[in-house]
Image 1 (cartoon, rainbow, N blue to C red):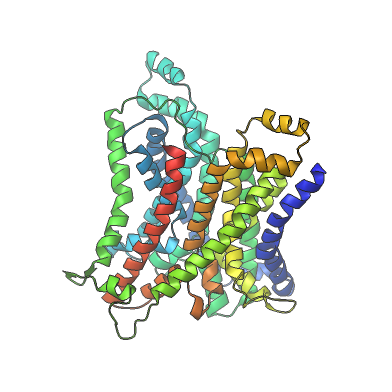
Image 2: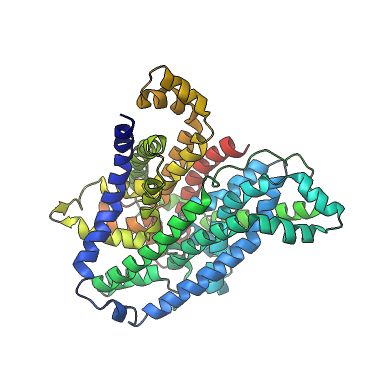
Length: 510
């Protein structure tokens, strides 16, 4: 009976992954790869340059993110101070923000001389991925015995020596793990590159989009996409094994010490670095040419008409919310059921496939596969929420695993002794204790669905554009009014997403 429940509980998660990712990837592989010269495609003009740029900017972005992220991670992990939970939320929010909104924020904060440059891309990647360092390295440093540090200081070690010879070696495995995830995120960057990148600054994702949409080279785009997916899937599988449950909250142990001067400086610089892009985004939404103006917000909310500029905010926002609610309704129960009953690691690794697949590749694969028999689902309104649910599923499962591991086994054993079935034990014991994980899963599913851009850009229709798609369309238009309206829309999207994440962080970090 127990094995039957395990199989039944894990089946929906595997079905979601298969329908949203595995079947489309397999279908386009069979259809477009068998008859082409794979090695010749990698030698086509633009591909080598895109691969080289993806590699070197990914490595440099990773090194810079680790370099700038480890210091605030140490302060947040080891000190308690007023506003700490807000700062943790401020650092965490960018990771689930729409990349299109992050790009807009950096267009607003950076001088025009840095627009469409590598520096803009690197800064945006640092801003976007520092939360990975905080969430992975922080819990480990949180658990370091303060007596060990004090012993080293007693023996004459300076703070720099303690950091270099004690703390870094202890955290080396998690730092490598965090760096691997950051590299994958930067290597496959799409939305940020599309907004901030200029001529010659194209990642493989941009090249895949160019070949599929502009050149009509579906076979070439498929080869590039499948190869990239296989490499990323292996990296994510390794990262998942090395991470365990470390992507959990920073606890309250060793957090009562007073801040020193260097820690205060780090807090100030971190706060300034993360509020500046958001503040500049708001400023740009209220500014056109050389004067203050509410034109962008008026156009956004339909209070002012501008010739040739039509944006239906209620429709875009309603579509985004409907998709987000539908994706959450799929991801949360499916993810919680799978982690509650299916403790096998291969299932947890399998659900990483949608996350390891580039959104551009995923959207292209679904567009081709489900647009004709036997899978003619292209017109189904459930298709986009299904993809969003698949992308959010790993985060739901990780939150549930972290919370489920601390449930006392004696409670389950006692219920089993009294004759309770696995379903009854989960319903009466696990579910009440998993309510924080449920709230986390709901918030992050909503946030990730609201901000998803890559796959949705392939799958959306004109009468069902989401808010990120509308923002991208505004930034593609020339002129101050489309730009300020796009900034206003990005501000609105960041505000909605930030509220969701902060609601989770108050439960997890306060």
